[in-house]
Length: 321
Image (tube, rainbow, N blue to C red; front, side):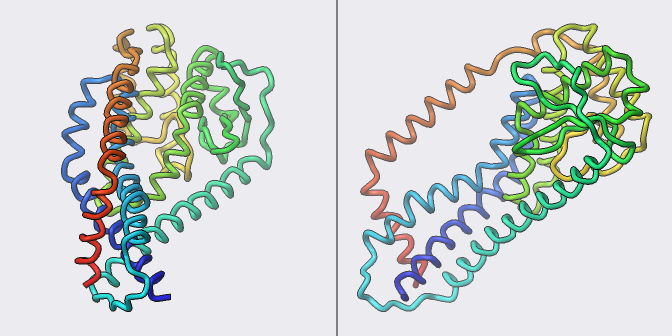
């Protein structure tokens, strides 16, 4: 019994230490990556910010599961009755608290989002004739004035919701551009990414997450248009819908066409008016570099796995005392 308790305490302690240290490092250094991302296409900037935000959780979880847990199970004597220090107990409790708080935040966000969508669905109906020019159709629902003018909601079965007021003020071309913008959010799984951000909540990350949300909107703008005319149509849609209703906080796990403060909306409109084709450049080369780096890390870890387990076990022995 004590062996299992020590193992759990050690595992959560390692997770808490790595997660906290990496999160603080991200809080202090994310602006440098953001400045670099400003020189890249908006899609790449959004992906870089999201990856940076998720690194602390996944690195801490990976090191705990791949190194800390196996080193304890393989190298820790089971017959030895060894007491744990107060530090290990406190760190273990901290790791458990982080995991439980993240799970609670994510579950609460899902419940609130489900209630919001259920409220919108009471008087909604599918617009069957809508064609958004993508490989697989995305259901577009016409809803009441209680919902935002235009938004995408849902994770497993995402849908685009458009109000009657939005249909009234937008021309056909503007509406099609706006719908393409929301479908891009669906294709990029941006609502799922928002859910993951709830799972890895950490103090001091609000500005990073806000920068990521703005980058996702600009990425969706760029992907939704293919020429200057479509860019102007989308800019007009953003302006009209921003005037249709005052800015209110967005609903949980949704991506509305206009859900940002006026300053961000103005920046998007200016980018669309000055639309240029190079924004559509591919990021496959960056993906290739990242893949090569990941393969190199995996190979190096496999070749040195035994020695790493010994060193990790030595560190956990110091931690437990």
